[in-house]
Length: 398
Image (tube, rainbow, N blue to C red; front, side):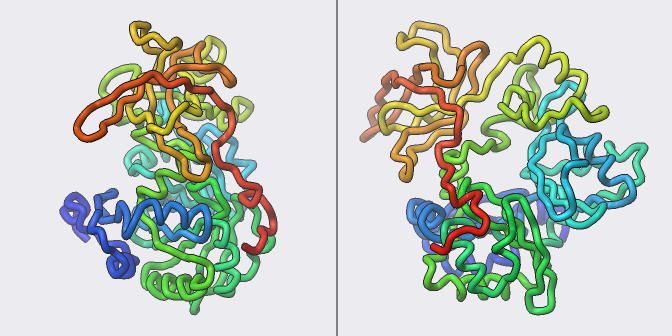
Protein backbone atom coordinates (compact mmCIF):
# COMPACT_ATOMS: atom_id res chain seq x y z
CA UNK A 1 0.00 0.00 0.00
CA UNK A 2 1.17 3.52 -0.76
CA UNK A 3 1.77 6.49 1.53
CA UNK A 4 -1.01 8.27 -0.37
CA UNK A 5 -3.48 5.53 0.56
CA UNK A 6 -2.58 5.88 4.22
CA UNK A 7 -2.82 9.68 4.10
CA UNK A 8 -6.20 9.65 2.39
CA UNK A 9 -7.77 7.14 4.78
CA UNK A 10 -8.12 4.46 2.12
CA UNK A 11 -6.92 1.51 4.14
CA UNK A 12 -9.47 -1.20 4.82
CA UNK A 13 -9.23 -3.51 7.78
CA UNK A 14 -9.44 -7.21 6.90
CA UNK A 15 -12.67 -7.14 8.94
CA UNK A 16 -14.12 -4.26 6.88
CA UNK A 17 -16.34 -6.41 4.67
CA UNK A 18 -17.93 -8.09 7.71
CA UNK A 19 -18.54 -4.73 9.40
CA UNK A 20 -19.91 -3.12 6.24
CA UNK A 21 -22.44 -5.92 5.89
CA UNK A 22 -23.83 -4.99 9.33
CA UNK A 23 -23.79 -1.22 8.79
CA UNK A 24 -27.12 0.63 8.66
CA UNK A 25 -25.96 4.16 9.59
CA UNK A 26 -23.08 5.00 7.24
CA UNK A 27 -21.20 6.76 10.07
CA UNK A 28 -17.47 6.20 9.54
CA UNK A 29 -14.29 8.13 10.22
CA UNK A 30 -10.55 7.86 9.61
CA UNK A 31 -8.23 6.30 12.18
CA UNK A 32 -4.57 6.41 11.17
CA UNK A 33 -5.40 5.81 7.52
CA UNK A 34 -8.11 3.20 8.16
CA UNK A 35 -11.83 3.65 7.66
CA UNK A 36 -13.61 2.68 10.90
CA UNK A 37 -17.23 2.96 12.12
CA UNK A 38 -18.50 5.43 14.72
CA UNK A 39 -21.49 3.11 15.07
CA UNK A 40 -23.01 0.38 12.94
CA UNK A 41 -26.67 0.43 14.02
CA UNK A 42 -27.11 2.29 17.32
CA UNK A 43 -24.35 3.49 19.64
CA UNK A 44 -26.51 2.98 22.76
CA UNK A 45 -27.40 -0.59 21.76
CA UNK A 46 -23.75 -1.26 21.02
CA UNK A 47 -22.79 0.17 24.41
CA UNK A 48 -25.16 -2.22 26.21
CA UNK A 49 -23.53 -5.12 24.39
CA UNK A 50 -20.32 -4.21 26.21
CA UNK A 51 -22.00 -4.17 29.61
CA UNK A 52 -24.58 -6.97 29.19
CA UNK A 53 -23.27 -9.40 26.57
CA UNK A 54 -20.29 -9.47 24.17
CA UNK A 55 -19.08 -6.57 22.05
CA UNK A 56 -16.57 -6.93 19.21
CA UNK A 57 -14.43 -3.94 18.21
CA UNK A 58 -11.94 -3.89 15.34
CA UNK A 59 -8.48 -3.08 16.77
CA UNK A 60 -6.57 -3.52 13.53
CA UNK A 61 -5.83 0.23 13.03
CA UNK A 62 -4.09 0.40 16.41
CA UNK A 63 -0.41 1.17 15.80
CA UNK A 64 1.77 -1.88 16.46
CA UNK A 65 5.54 -2.25 16.67
CA UNK A 66 7.52 -5.49 17.00
CA UNK A 67 10.58 -5.00 19.22
CA UNK A 68 13.16 -7.78 19.41
CA UNK A 69 16.85 -8.45 19.76
CA UNK A 70 19.41 -9.03 22.53
CA UNK A 71 18.79 -5.57 24.07
CA UNK A 72 14.99 -5.46 23.65
CA UNK A 73 14.22 -5.42 27.37
CA UNK A 74 17.00 -2.90 28.15
CA UNK A 75 15.78 -0.70 25.30
CA UNK A 76 12.20 -0.68 26.61
CA UNK A 77 13.43 0.00 30.14
CA UNK A 78 15.18 3.11 28.82
CA UNK A 79 12.14 4.12 26.79
CA UNK A 80 9.25 3.81 29.29
CA UNK A 81 8.87 4.86 32.92
CA UNK A 82 7.94 1.50 34.45
CA UNK A 83 10.30 -1.41 35.23
CA UNK A 84 10.10 -3.78 32.27
CA UNK A 85 12.24 -6.39 34.03
CA UNK A 86 9.13 -7.25 36.04
CA UNK A 87 7.09 -8.04 32.91
CA UNK A 88 7.67 -11.74 32.24
CA UNK A 89 7.03 -13.52 28.94
CA UNK A 90 3.31 -14.11 28.55
CA UNK A 91 2.40 -10.87 30.33
CA UNK A 92 1.17 -7.47 29.17
CA UNK A 93 2.08 -4.10 30.71
CA UNK A 94 0.40 -0.72 30.47
CA UNK A 95 3.12 1.92 30.05
CA UNK A 96 3.83 5.55 29.20
CA UNK A 97 6.88 7.10 27.57
CA UNK A 98 8.09 10.66 27.96
CA UNK A 99 10.39 13.20 26.40
CA UNK A 100 13.39 14.59 28.27
CA UNK A 101 11.14 17.10 30.06
CA UNK A 102 9.13 14.28 31.60
CA UNK A 103 6.07 15.05 29.43
CA UNK A 104 4.01 12.15 28.12
CA UNK A 105 4.45 11.37 24.44
CA UNK A 106 1.90 8.55 24.53
CA UNK A 107 0.60 5.62 26.51
CA UNK A 108 0.03 2.07 25.34
CA UNK A 109 0.40 -1.62 26.04
CA UNK A 110 3.56 -3.69 25.77
CA UNK A 111 3.08 -7.40 25.12
CA UNK A 112 5.99 -9.65 26.15
CA UNK A 113 5.26 -12.22 23.46
CA UNK A 114 8.17 -14.55 24.12
CA UNK A 115 11.59 -14.25 25.72
CA UNK A 116 13.15 -11.08 24.28
CA UNK A 117 10.28 -10.40 21.86
CA UNK A 118 7.73 -7.62 22.43
CA UNK A 119 4.85 -5.83 20.73
CA UNK A 120 4.19 -2.19 21.61
CA UNK A 121 0.69 -0.89 20.81
CA UNK A 122 -0.38 2.75 20.87
CA UNK A 123 -2.94 5.09 19.39
CA UNK A 124 -0.40 7.37 17.71
CA UNK A 125 2.54 6.53 15.46
CA UNK A 126 6.02 6.93 16.92
CA UNK A 127 8.37 5.12 14.57
CA UNK A 128 10.84 8.02 14.30
CA UNK A 129 10.98 8.43 18.09
CA UNK A 130 11.38 4.68 18.65
CA UNK A 131 14.17 4.49 16.08
CA UNK A 132 16.01 7.46 17.62
CA UNK A 133 15.80 5.69 20.98
CA UNK A 134 17.60 2.59 19.61
CA UNK A 135 20.95 4.42 19.71
CA UNK A 136 23.39 2.23 21.68
CA UNK A 137 21.11 -0.82 21.77
CA UNK A 138 21.24 -4.05 19.76
CA UNK A 139 17.52 -4.06 19.00
CA UNK A 140 15.22 -4.31 16.00
CA UNK A 141 12.06 -2.16 15.79
CA UNK A 142 9.57 -3.01 13.05
CA UNK A 143 6.25 -1.40 12.21
CA UNK A 144 3.69 -4.20 11.89
CA UNK A 145 0.28 -2.53 12.02
CA UNK A 146 -0.83 -3.89 8.65
CA UNK A 147 0.63 -7.34 9.43
CA UNK A 148 -1.66 -8.09 12.39
CA UNK A 149 -5.45 -8.19 12.44
CA UNK A 150 -6.95 -7.69 15.89
CA UNK A 151 -10.34 -7.76 17.60
CA UNK A 152 -11.38 -6.67 21.09
CA UNK A 153 -13.95 -9.10 22.50
CA UNK A 154 -15.41 -7.46 25.59
CA UNK A 155 -18.25 -7.99 28.02
CA UNK A 156 -19.66 -10.40 30.62
CA UNK A 157 -20.33 -13.22 28.13
CA UNK A 158 -16.96 -12.89 26.33
CA UNK A 159 -15.43 -15.81 28.27
CA UNK A 160 -18.40 -18.00 27.40
CA UNK A 161 -18.18 -17.06 23.72
CA UNK A 162 -14.47 -17.81 23.43
CA UNK A 163 -14.86 -21.05 25.38
CA UNK A 164 -17.65 -22.12 23.02
CA UNK A 165 -15.34 -21.29 20.15
CA UNK A 166 -12.96 -23.92 21.52
CA UNK A 167 -10.08 -21.78 22.81
CA UNK A 168 -8.22 -23.74 25.48
CA UNK A 169 -6.46 -22.19 28.46
CA UNK A 170 -8.88 -19.32 29.09
CA UNK A 171 -9.85 -20.64 32.52
CA UNK A 172 -6.35 -19.96 33.87
CA UNK A 173 -5.63 -16.78 31.90
CA UNK A 174 -5.30 -13.89 34.36
CA UNK A 175 -5.80 -10.19 33.59
CA UNK A 176 -2.87 -8.86 31.53
CA UNK A 177 -1.88 -12.38 30.54
CA UNK A 178 -1.58 -13.82 27.03
CA UNK A 179 -1.58 -17.25 25.41
CA UNK A 180 -0.89 -18.58 21.93
CA UNK A 181 -3.31 -21.14 20.48
CA UNK A 182 -3.97 -22.77 17.12
CA UNK A 183 -6.76 -21.47 14.91
CA UNK A 184 -7.27 -23.36 11.64
CA UNK A 185 -3.52 -23.90 11.36
CA UNK A 186 -2.59 -20.30 12.22
CA UNK A 187 -1.23 -18.90 15.47
CA UNK A 188 -3.86 -16.94 17.35
CA UNK A 189 -2.75 -14.84 20.29
CA UNK A 190 -5.35 -14.21 22.98
CA UNK A 191 -4.67 -11.57 25.62
CA UNK A 192 -6.86 -10.72 28.59
CA UNK A 193 -6.78 -7.00 27.91
CA UNK A 194 -9.18 -4.28 26.79
CA UNK A 195 -10.29 -0.67 26.94
CA UNK A 196 -13.75 -1.11 28.51
CA UNK A 197 -13.05 -1.74 32.20
CA UNK A 198 -14.97 -5.02 31.98
CA UNK A 199 -14.20 -8.69 31.46
CA UNK A 200 -12.64 -8.92 28.03
CA UNK A 201 -10.04 -10.27 25.66
CA UNK A 202 -8.17 -9.23 22.54
CA UNK A 203 -7.49 -11.56 19.60
CA UNK A 204 -4.46 -11.15 17.34
CA UNK A 205 -3.96 -13.06 14.08
CA UNK A 206 -2.51 -12.83 10.56
CA UNK A 207 -4.80 -10.81 8.24
CA UNK A 208 -5.48 -13.71 5.88
CA UNK A 209 -7.31 -15.51 8.71
CA UNK A 210 -9.30 -12.46 9.82
CA UNK A 211 -12.65 -13.23 8.22
CA UNK A 212 -12.51 -16.86 9.30
CA UNK A 213 -11.85 -15.71 12.87
CA UNK A 214 -14.75 -13.24 12.70
CA UNK A 215 -17.14 -15.91 11.39
CA UNK A 216 -16.12 -18.46 14.04
CA UNK A 217 -16.45 -15.86 16.77
CA UNK A 218 -19.93 -14.74 15.75
CA UNK A 219 -21.10 -18.33 15.26
CA UNK A 220 -19.97 -19.14 18.83
CA UNK A 221 -21.62 -16.00 20.15
CA UNK A 222 -25.09 -16.50 18.70
CA UNK A 223 -26.63 -17.41 22.05
CA UNK A 224 -24.59 -14.88 24.04
CA UNK A 225 -25.76 -11.58 22.54
CA UNK A 226 -22.63 -10.93 20.50
CA UNK A 227 -22.61 -7.65 18.58
CA UNK A 228 -20.10 -5.63 16.57
CA UNK A 229 -19.57 -2.08 17.85
CA UNK A 230 -18.04 1.22 16.78
CA UNK A 231 -15.96 3.84 18.53
CA UNK A 232 -18.91 5.76 20.06
CA UNK A 233 -19.84 2.85 22.34
CA UNK A 234 -16.20 2.17 23.21
CA UNK A 235 -15.72 5.82 24.19
CA UNK A 236 -18.59 5.63 26.67
CA UNK A 237 -17.12 2.50 28.26
CA UNK A 238 -13.57 3.83 28.54
CA UNK A 239 -14.76 6.97 30.39
CA UNK A 240 -16.67 4.76 32.86
CA UNK A 241 -13.46 2.81 33.37
CA UNK A 242 -11.49 6.02 33.98
CA UNK A 243 -9.05 5.25 31.15
CA UNK A 244 -7.03 8.01 29.53
CA UNK A 245 -7.08 8.83 25.83
CA UNK A 246 -4.57 10.82 23.82
CA UNK A 247 -5.95 14.17 22.59
CA UNK A 248 -8.52 14.03 25.40
CA UNK A 249 -6.77 13.70 28.78
CA UNK A 250 -3.39 14.69 27.35
CA UNK A 251 -1.76 15.96 24.20
CA UNK A 252 1.27 13.98 23.00
CA UNK A 253 4.30 16.06 23.97
CA UNK A 254 5.73 15.90 20.45
CA UNK A 255 2.48 17.35 19.03
CA UNK A 256 2.16 20.45 21.22
CA UNK A 257 3.08 23.96 20.06
CA UNK A 258 2.53 26.01 23.23
CA UNK A 259 4.27 25.40 26.53
CA UNK A 260 2.14 24.10 29.37
CA UNK A 261 -0.19 22.11 27.11
CA UNK A 262 1.39 18.69 27.68
CA UNK A 263 1.20 16.64 30.88
CA UNK A 264 3.54 14.45 32.91
CA UNK A 265 2.55 10.98 34.13
CA UNK A 266 2.44 12.39 37.68
CA UNK A 267 -0.10 14.99 36.57
CA UNK A 268 -2.17 12.23 34.95
CA UNK A 269 -2.38 10.15 38.13
CA UNK A 270 0.08 7.59 36.78
CA UNK A 271 2.56 7.79 39.66
CA UNK A 272 2.40 4.00 39.97
CA UNK A 273 3.89 3.72 36.49
CA UNK A 274 7.01 5.76 37.31
CA UNK A 275 9.74 3.61 38.89
CA UNK A 276 12.57 5.74 40.26
CA UNK A 277 14.39 2.64 41.56
CA UNK A 278 15.37 1.46 38.08
CA UNK A 279 18.25 2.90 35.99
CA UNK A 280 17.88 5.99 33.83
CA UNK A 281 14.87 6.40 31.56
CA UNK A 282 13.61 9.20 29.35
CA UNK A 283 12.47 12.10 31.50
CA UNK A 284 13.70 10.66 34.81
CA UNK A 285 15.47 13.82 35.98
CA UNK A 286 12.52 16.09 35.20
CA UNK A 287 10.07 13.72 36.88
CA UNK A 288 12.25 13.42 39.99
CA UNK A 289 12.29 17.20 40.26
CA UNK A 290 8.51 17.35 39.81
CA UNK A 291 8.06 14.74 42.53
CA UNK A 292 10.14 16.87 44.91
CA UNK A 293 8.48 20.20 44.08
CA UNK A 294 4.93 19.08 43.30
CA UNK A 295 2.90 18.94 40.09
CA UNK A 296 1.11 21.85 38.47
CA UNK A 297 -1.94 19.82 37.39
CA UNK A 298 -4.02 16.92 38.67
CA UNK A 299 -6.31 14.55 36.78
CA UNK A 300 -9.70 14.17 38.50
CA UNK A 301 -12.66 11.83 38.19
CA UNK A 302 -15.92 13.69 38.79
CA UNK A 303 -19.41 12.54 39.81
CA UNK A 304 -21.51 15.50 38.65
CA UNK A 305 -25.05 16.38 39.75
CA UNK A 306 -27.76 16.23 37.12
CA UNK A 307 -27.91 14.35 33.83
CA UNK A 308 -26.43 16.81 31.33
CA UNK A 309 -22.94 15.70 30.26
CA UNK A 310 -20.35 18.38 30.98
CA UNK A 311 -18.65 18.39 27.58
CA UNK A 312 -15.82 20.96 27.32
CA UNK A 313 -16.91 22.60 30.59
CA UNK A 314 -14.84 24.75 32.91
CA UNK A 315 -14.28 23.62 36.51
CA UNK A 316 -14.51 26.08 39.42
CA UNK A 317 -13.63 25.88 43.09
CA UNK A 318 -16.87 27.63 44.10
CA UNK A 319 -20.36 27.95 42.68
CA UNK A 320 -20.09 31.60 41.64
CA UNK A 321 -19.21 32.04 37.98
CA UNK A 322 -17.19 35.16 38.53
CA UNK A 323 -14.53 33.13 40.31
CA UNK A 324 -11.40 32.12 38.41
CA UNK A 325 -11.68 28.72 36.74
CA UNK A 326 -9.29 26.08 38.08
CA UNK A 327 -9.47 23.54 35.27
CA UNK A 328 -11.61 21.95 32.59
CA UNK A 329 -13.38 18.75 31.60
CA UNK A 330 -11.53 16.48 29.18
CA UNK A 331 -14.10 13.67 28.73
CA UNK A 332 -17.74 13.45 29.82
CA UNK A 333 -20.72 11.11 29.48
CA UNK A 334 -23.99 10.18 31.11
CA UNK A 335 -23.33 6.60 32.25
CA UNK A 336 -26.36 4.37 31.60
CA UNK A 337 -25.06 1.50 33.72
CA UNK A 338 -23.82 3.62 36.64
CA UNK A 339 -26.78 6.01 36.41
CA UNK A 340 -24.32 8.84 36.96
CA UNK A 341 -23.22 11.99 35.18
CA UNK A 342 -19.47 11.39 35.06
CA UNK A 343 -16.40 13.07 33.68
CA UNK A 344 -12.62 13.18 33.64
CA UNK A 345 -10.93 16.54 34.00
CA UNK A 346 -7.72 18.34 34.81
CA UNK A 347 -7.41 20.96 37.56
CA UNK A 348 -4.61 23.06 38.97
CA UNK A 349 -3.09 21.81 42.20
CA UNK A 350 -3.73 21.90 45.11
CA UNK A 351 -7.37 21.57 43.99
CA UNK A 352 -8.99 18.20 43.25
CA UNK A 353 -8.20 16.10 46.30
CA UNK A 354 -10.42 12.96 46.41
CA UNK A 355 -13.57 13.63 48.41
CA UNK A 356 -13.54 17.37 47.73
CA UNK A 357 -16.37 19.27 46.06
CA UNK A 358 -15.93 21.33 42.90
CA UNK A 359 -18.34 23.08 40.54
CA UNK A 360 -18.76 22.57 36.80
CA UNK A 361 -20.35 25.06 34.39
CA UNK A 362 -22.52 22.91 32.13
CA UNK A 363 -23.88 24.14 28.80
CA UNK A 364 -26.56 22.25 26.89
CA UNK A 365 -28.88 22.98 23.99
CA UNK A 366 -32.60 22.28 23.75
CA UNK A 367 -34.55 23.28 20.61
CA UNK A 368 -31.92 25.78 19.46
CA UNK A 369 -31.73 27.52 22.85
CA UNK A 370 -28.58 27.23 24.95
CA UNK A 371 -28.85 26.76 28.69
CA UNK A 372 -26.18 26.79 31.38
CA UNK A 373 -26.06 25.94 35.04
CA UNK A 374 -23.51 25.34 37.76
CA UNK A 375 -23.46 21.69 38.82
CA UNK A 376 -21.87 20.34 41.98
CA UNK A 377 -19.19 17.71 41.35
CA UNK A 378 -17.62 15.26 43.80
CA UNK A 379 -14.02 14.18 43.20
CA UNK A 380 -13.77 10.37 43.39
CA UNK A 381 -10.63 8.24 43.47
CA UNK A 382 -11.86 4.98 41.86
CA UNK A 383 -13.12 4.00 38.40
CA UNK A 384 -16.84 4.49 37.93
CA UNK A 385 -17.17 0.92 36.63
CA UNK A 386 -15.13 -1.99 37.98
CA UNK A 387 -17.19 -5.22 38.18
CA UNK A 388 -15.70 -8.21 40.06
CA UNK A 389 -15.75 -10.31 36.88
CA UNK A 390 -13.11 -8.01 35.42
CA UNK A 391 -10.41 -9.63 37.55
CA UNK A 392 -11.98 -13.01 38.45
CA UNK A 393 -9.98 -16.08 37.36
CA UNK A 394 -11.64 -18.10 36.02
CA UNK A 395 -14.45 -15.75 35.02
CA UNK A 396 -17.97 -16.98 35.64
CA UNK A 397 -20.21 -18.30 32.92
CA UNK A 398 -22.75 -15.63 32.01
